[in-house]
Length: 355
Image (cartoon, rainbow, N blue to C red; front, side, top):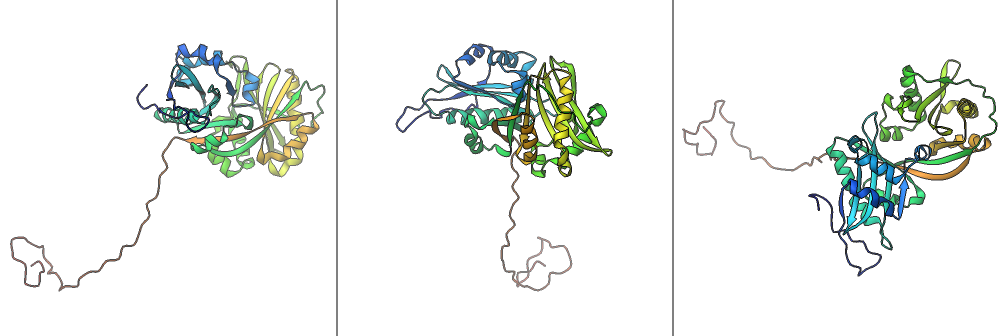
């Protein structure tokens, strides 16, 4: 057992079951084949993971490679000689924050919560030791781990509904012609984000303008991140950020709240732009505060496929402000002290004053 690793967490379906120790440590190369034995493994950070694809062995090999240990930190939980838990993160380029990308367990008939209570705090401490201030997770409701996240200090700040459209045969002509994003547009997109997103969510996500940088093909293998801007009367009213892998795409939409009537035109515009590159599957995650975009997506053949919750975990300690209390006390009134420096070489006067 490595120093500082949590241990002794009970894995028990009911009272009276033997307590099994849980040891948490980083993922090693010898652990990669054991990942196939996990009963459940949830690829997270959806819908991006659905576009890029996730393979447990491939991702595990990347995490233990010399170049991947810093970019893809991963941790396992052992109970005896059995691997019972797995958590994989990804360090995002624009500010180094950690995004939870996979979470798995193999506990048979036992409850997995003790595994999360050992595994996740260990990962948070490792992130803090590396200077990371925030960790994030997008947790589908079907994973049923949200209560454990809340108990462990992860704070929910938004919900998402993921929509999917298959093989779009035809796309309506948009009344807005999109413009391809270039490097000089990041500040304008960030300002649009600030106008569209509630302040509480902005504080939780803590994005800088680098969040909206685009990546051409070649920077991430076959994957590319692009953006389209929609302007009306010389005002930026909409934006679409797209992660593409061949004919599969994940779209993130921003529409200015006072111009929601243009939401359909923004969706048509981005679908038309994607049509030139082939459209087989298009995913779109809509936040709870963007509910007005659900109807235009449904009208264009999108179906809601699952919902998820967005969490943030801070590694910094909470600073508590001390409470100032008034303490009553009495002061004995004596004769005024002479205006000179007291000395210990003269005896005190009879009344007790110095001098």
